Image (tube, one colour):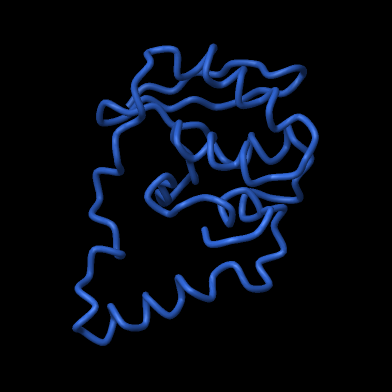
Length: 135
């Protein structure tokens, strides 16, 4: 794992290179764009594009793209362009998290059924700046 800091405007943004993928710290995105916390950022992003480790929540290239298209905050498009140029300039999407995602549970088991219900309800009342639709 390799960690670097880049600057977006006056805001330091943590960049993590891990398992062949590039990830940005969600907390830093939130601070730079005026969101109250990282939770508001990741509510608008497909869970496959978010990596929740024990010490930091990170977002990959596709997650930043989703946020730019779904969010309504000023500066999102500018941040997206900056991230593509300064962070994800390799032209390849970041790798998926090394840990298997829970959403791969078959819907036939009770956990899978619960997960499907939660995914359908995820957007309702999430309080994020999404333009609507599913996450």
